[in-house]
Length: 176
Image (cartoon, rainbow, N blue to C red):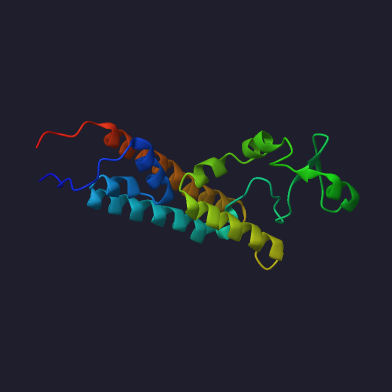
């Protein structure tokens, strides 16, 4: 039996944005409540499993190093926080011409951020935990890789869901 369509007729970009903000929300707005709920639960559980397996520091935020310090660039070279004179003069890598190099050095973050604001909140927590020091060490390679894969795959799965929901929003309504 087909699911009853009780959704609104919204433009595809609105449906896509809602799907990025909350996984499955695009389907929910289209009236496909059960599909939206299943997608939401699946994607969030997959993302949280990645965090539980490898810890909050699995979110490796561009613009920050492993210790939570801002990555700074001066004349195209990285400057360490230990070099206080140069570090104070250098600009943050994401705003001083190093945006592309920072993103390409951490490509898994692109997949992770596709899950939406959940990743952005996790990124803030990850940087905060990293700045606290040795109380919260990064996981070792096998767990770190598995957690990164889980979180990035959750984001990529959400991208597929966003595309599908936006496509469905653009289809003409069936005659009743």
